[in-house]
Image (cartoon, rainbow, N blue to C red; front, side):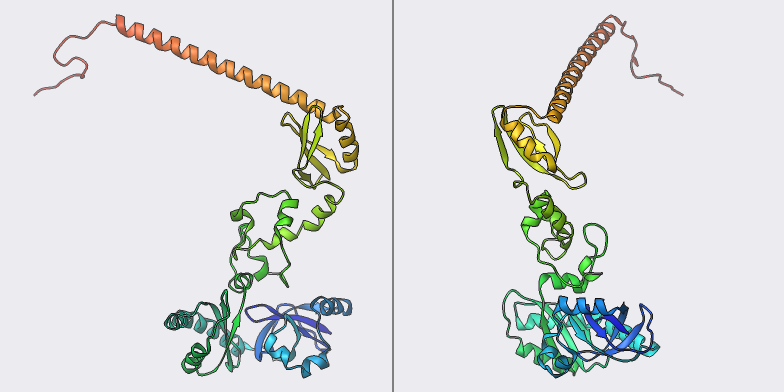
Length: 357
């Protein structure tokens, strides 16, 4: 049987192949990966078809080539063959928890050490392997950094082998995790296997607001969810002009405002400013009709609604005017009543009663 496992803070994927015993989902196991000895979580069992798909997706080499290729140990591929050593016992789990706590306590000290070297880099996180034979540091930087002196100081402090791995902004969000703008955990730190290429064209074709605060994730890049529905929108826009295209007619310009993916329709904005939907199958007929000087049937009905809306607005304005006239007349009556009201006499008039002992 074949199993898929996840290990490490960067959420590497591992394949356990040709196992005889059954392993339940969520079981902690101790594996030997290209990095060394570490604890992994069993995601589930893989069929032969699923195994082939994973190999093709990540271009995984054959198992014999992976064991002989020393370059894989340094590049750390996202998917690799791993070896099952044993099931994780309570001691292994407690050691892993203690290592995570020790990493959180040592991280501020490492960042202080980095300030003394004045290197243009940011330490994101650190990670011990289970046997503590290697300590990984993940950092971000916009340029290549010569950190040889910094590595020597780290090795002297932690007394183990030190390896620094440069990561990108999206990998930083993947390692640290957090809540996305939707309120759910970040997809990259929760269930995503790899990052998909995302461009601003995906946002435009989905007719989303080009507001960086609304389309950017915790990493500062475009959110990964922008690619989830892109294929559907791309298929929808395949035979349509780009959003914002104008159709010139004798009565004015019609503008393509967007698309409605639920009804598979195009949102059109008329010269009067009214928006209406046209099915994609009827878009060519609509274009031919309006370019010939005729009106679209649905557009006529909505124009009547717009005219009724304008009339309703005029009635509301007239009602507001009548209300303001009524208020002025009431204020005038109140002023006349106060003028004819007799004034009170006495020392304490208008101040209420006074009491003396």
